[in-house]
Structures are given as structure tokens and as C-alpha cells.
Amino acid sequence: MPNPTAAMLVIGDEILSGRTRDANMYYLAGELTKAGIDLKEVRVVSDDASAIVAAVRALSEGFDTVVTSGGIGPTHDDITADCIAEAFGDTIDIRDDARALLAAHYEKAGTELNAARLRMARIPSKATLIDNPVSVAPGFKMENVHVMAGVPSVFQAMVASMMPTLTGGQPLISQTLRIVRGEGDIAGPLGVLAQKYPDLSMGSYPFQKDGVYGANIVIRGTDEGAVATAIAELSEAFA
Amino acid sequence: MPNPTAAMLVIGDEILSGRTRDANMYYLAGELTKAGIDLKEVRVVSDDASAIVAAVRALSEGFDTVVTSGGIGPTHDDITADCIAEAFGDTIDIRDDARALLAAHYEKAGTELNAARLRMARIPSKATLIDNPVSVAPGFKMENVHVMAGVPSVFQAMVASMMPTLTGGQPLISQTLRIVRGEGDIAGPLGVLAQKYPDLSMGSYPFQKDGVYGANIVIRGTDEGAVATAIAELSEAFA
Image (cartoon, rainbow over all chains, first blue to last red; front, side):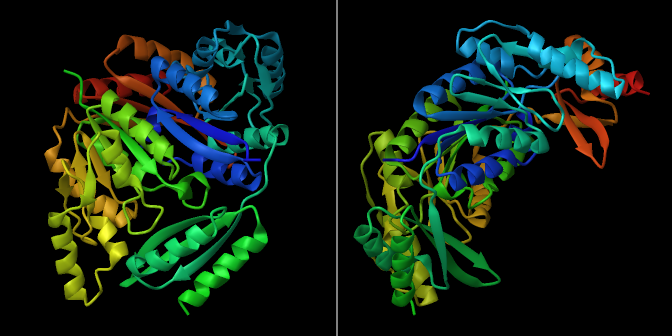
């Protein structure tokens, strides 16, 4: 049985303008791979309602699970929750369960739960809340879409809340062989090996550093023995 | 007149599996922003022909310029060139101009131009080559799609070859104000400011470090004076 699939939607002008280097994609990719869930596509869109709604619909239809990152804070540019409601034809307003979480948190901190902070309690009516142990304002799950904060520490905590709820697949085993040869010399034997082991995926990632050329060959698959055998054969071919 | 738009397509399992942290998106975003070209969307897809073809078509139709990264090397998993030909209904084969570049390079290096290396001369018939000063194997431009290598040093060299060929827009001026307050306290005044200056874009990027909470407020626009005035007003509101 093929592994479950996932897609990610990163929302935020700060990535597209080059101001911020994405960290959440890299983190989520690693967590999903460990759980045997295949991350198949990532999209990054700006803080633009029609772009967000279109991407949510396309990814929700195309993959088993979708994770979004960004746009659920208290400021005017945080429009993700409203876009999710629109994408699924749901209504959205301040919800009592989310408001209670925020009220308890800000009362303890002696901070006013003002109108801006209350925006973080705007959740689509049919969504389920996702726990945020870092800064309390919850994420939420709507159909197969998990909506999470963009701040990396909060994103990671929400991913930790989500992972046990997902159905995993067979974890992918991966082994890497570093070959100090031009990729053009590696390609022939590697292609033969890829045909011999159609259930394994083989990738070649060339490097050039301090005048040394070569490639890291990564062989991935769910059968640990097959991965080890293929790596051994490749290693022998370049001994 | 609005700025020209761009999209990026990153091709490669290594990003989606969490093995490699993307560097090209961050680099390209910065270069395009400097040139006044708005990067509107990025997609990351795996080494899968139908996913690549569909993404190329969608992005090519939706944006002025598209840049792809990855999948043009000599190994069996490098399928980008064939996918571009398919996306635009063009034929593809080893082209004499690209072969000549490779032949001269490998002859000088005393390296055999074998079948695998010749794959890098497979270019769609209607494409224009993009210069690769690092490792010679060319990228290419097909309609509005610029096809580039995934190795960051090569990608960056190809971007340098491409940038002078693009029509730029008004460069975006951006100023940042660091405010050590909860984002919920910043949101109100920031929202008022955003309504007062509809031509400026204002983003709030919260941080929490060593127990200090705050947000970097970034104000962007093409009118340097307006950006400076808005930053000054925001600064005064939190003095």
C-alpha cells in the first residue's frame, strides 16, 4: 500500500520577499518523512485572500493531509483563518472555546485581551482546535487541513500536537554514499542500479567544494535490506 | 503600473524529504525583490513528470516570469528538460549548440563526454540556452520559463545571467521597526496605519527570544518618503 500523502502551504510575504528564510518547510518535511508520510508538494503564497483560498482547495483535494503555516496572528495581515472558512464554505467568528483559552492566558499574564488579540479566537465553526503549548492562541483543523502558526517555535509545537493524530506509513529508510567522481561518471552505473531496484528511489545530489567534485547518492525505500544491498553494489562499482 | 510578477518551481525529492534545506528560493526572492519584480508564488514538487508538467503550465500561465530549479543533471532522476518540452508541446533531443559547449569543456578537462553527460545537451527545440559559467552545462529559456540547475552555486550564476534580460519594476523599499511589545498591543495602531497608507504593505513578524516578546514590523512600498513617514509615525506611537 502506498504511503499517505501530504502537502504544505506556507503563507506569508516575508518568505516571497526574501526577508525571511523558510524554516518550517524543512522541519515539517523531516517529521513527515520519519512518520512514513510522503510530502508531495509545497506551495508558498503571499498574504492574498484569493491565492490562499485557491491553494487550500487544490491541495486539500489533491492530498491526504495539508498543513498550513503562517497568517493566524492578531494583526491586519493575518487572514488565513478567514480564507480557510471561505475555502470550505464555513462561517467564521470569535469562538467561545478559543476565547476561553486566550482569556485564561492573558488574565494570568496581566495583559488585556483587546480586540486585536481576540482576532486569534476567530475560528471557522466546524473546525477542531489544535493545542498551542507555546503561546496559547490555537491552531485548528478543518477537514484535512491543519492550520498552524508561522513562528517556528510555535509551528513546531503544533506539529508535535498534530503528528500523533495522523495515520503514518512505512518509514522511509535512506542511506547515502558519497562518491568523489563527476556526476557524469556516476550516472551510468546508477541508472542500471535504479532499473534493477524499481522499488527504491535513487537521487544524485552533486557537490563541488574546494575544487573537489562529486555527488552524494541517496537511496531510499521502505525495505531496509534492499537499501543496504543497493548501496553495497553501488559502493563496489566505484571502489 | 504594477510590478512584473514571477513564480518559482523547485523540483526535487531532496527538499520534500527533508534531506536538504532549500537555499535557491531564498536567494531568488532577494534578487527579484531588488529588481522590483514581485515573486508571487513558489511551488516545490517531486521528481514526478506529471506533477512537474502541471506546475509548469499553471505557473507559466499565471505569472510574467517563471524560474525553475533542479533536475537538469546527467542522472536518471533528471527529467526537467523533458517535462518542459512536454508542457509546451515541443520536441526534445540532444542539440548541437549545447553539445558543442559540453564537448569543448570536457575535452579541456580530459573527461569523456559519455552518454550520461550528453543528456545535459537534451534541450527543447525552441528553447534559448542560458549561460552556465560554473559548470558549463547550460540552462535554457522556453517561452517565459527559465530552467536552471539546483546546485546553489550554479543556480546563482544562472540567475546572474538571467536578471539583465528581465524587465524590472520599481524596487521595493523596506524599513523595519523592532517593537518590544506583544503583537496584540501593536496590532491596533498598526491596523490604523495600514488603512491610512493603502499603498504601503505592512507586515508583523513576531519573535520571542530569551523571554523577550516583540515583533519586527516591516513596511514596504515603492515610495521611499511614504515608507519613512509611516515608520516614523509607528515609532512615535510606541515611544
